[in-house]
Structure formats: structure tokens, C-alpha cells
Length: 187
Image 1 (spheres, helix red, strand yellow):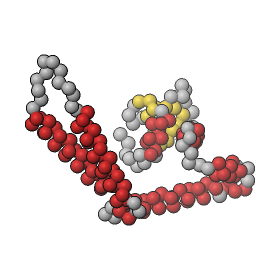
Image 2 (cartoon, rainbow, N blue to C red):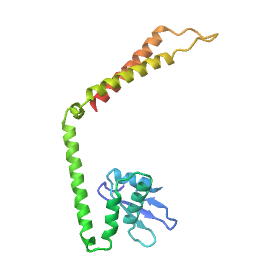
Image 3 (cartoon, one colour):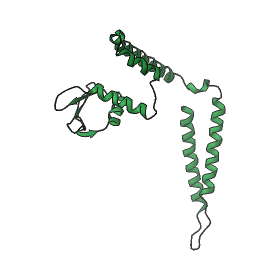
């Protein structure tokens, strides 16, 4: 298995299938997008020619996301990118885009660090307490509905359920609900 700093090598066969050399299995574009989202660098090469196809496949992944309505790139930005291919700005655009994305990554990292340092970043959001109260009321309503849904009319031949079993089950559900509420409060 390669080191996490090494790019994940993907080989494209003549059949256009993509082969993950680390796990020895075939992968899809969605799999490759997942590797990248997880922070892994990838390199895609053509097995026959040895050509680096990484750029081509990354553009294809972006195009597929955009065509599914997952729009990240505004039309104006796409238009400007097309224009740069026919102007003198073509030489500066790659450096500008790389620097811009580096600044974006740094800003996101700092923001996440700052959020992690706060006891509860949502406490300062207006209406947070009201939202928590609504969540509590919603969960209480669900719990009452579960209690009603769990009761059925006895059928002929059924043995009556023990009230202690019902109480134990209800206590278990209440405990699970309390745990969920504490997790929600921690978010």
C-alpha cells in the first residue's frame, strides 16, 4: 500500500475501465471523486501509452457534477475561463486560480479551528434557543407517538404483556432520546 502522501495511481485500460493499483479493483469516476474529497491526490495514466490523463478525468468529474445540478462554478466564471484560452491572460490564470484556492483552503482551515475552539458556536445564533425548544417538542411528540404505536389490541390466544417489560422498554427509549438530545445540543 502506498504512503498517504503519494498520489493514488489509477490505470486506464484500453477498455476505458479505471483500475485502482492499491486495492486491485476497478473504480468509477464517483469513486475517484470520493478519494479526492477524502484528501487523497490521484494520478490517472493510460496503461498503453503512459500518458497522464488526470486533468482530463478531473474535468470530466467536474462536468458531471455540474450537469447533475451541483453547480459550484457560476456561468460568468466558466465564460471567463473559456475566454482565457484565447487571450494573453492564459499564462497568468493557472497561477491566479491556484493561489485563490490555496487562500480558500487556508481560510476554511482557520474557520474550522476557530469553530472547534468555541464551546458551542450555535449559541450566539439568533433564535438558537427557540430552535432547540422546537426540536425538544418535536422529539417529545415522536416519543408519544411511539408509545401509542407500540400498543395493539390483544388477539385471541395472546398472553398479556407484563407492565414491567413495557416500563423497561419505555425507559430504554427515553434514555436513547436523552442521548440524542445531548448530541444535538453539542452540535
